[in-house]
Length: 152
Image 1: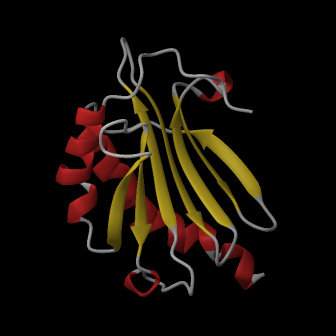
Image 2 (image 1 turned 120 degrees about the vertical axis):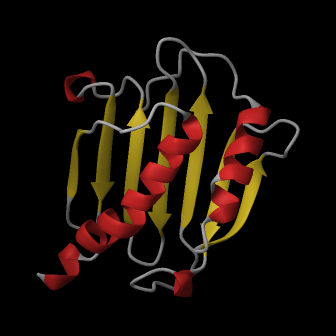
């Protein structure tokens, strides 16, 4: 169960910035939408082209869901990647679900395995944090954790 965010409602302008500055520039992403719409944006959803990923997945498109609340001293966010083809989930959360892991943690689950640990991000601004997380997802997390259970 997720701990409710303590900050203000999401900022549609921040979501528009994250869409424009980051998500629209990732070649593996084929669509980005505001949920429920661009006026009342409460989250962003990005769809990955299954054949654009390395290694490819499919036939269904993986998604990245993003919720972000600006607040002091640290923002609250949840960035979750789900691949329905392999039942793989990876998430970066800066919330209060696991205070024993520090301010920010990473978690993943496969059909056979679940794990989580604290992480330190190199950046402070939302756009750079999102770039860092997507780069880590594509270059490290998917190859290392999404397919590790298939090699057993």
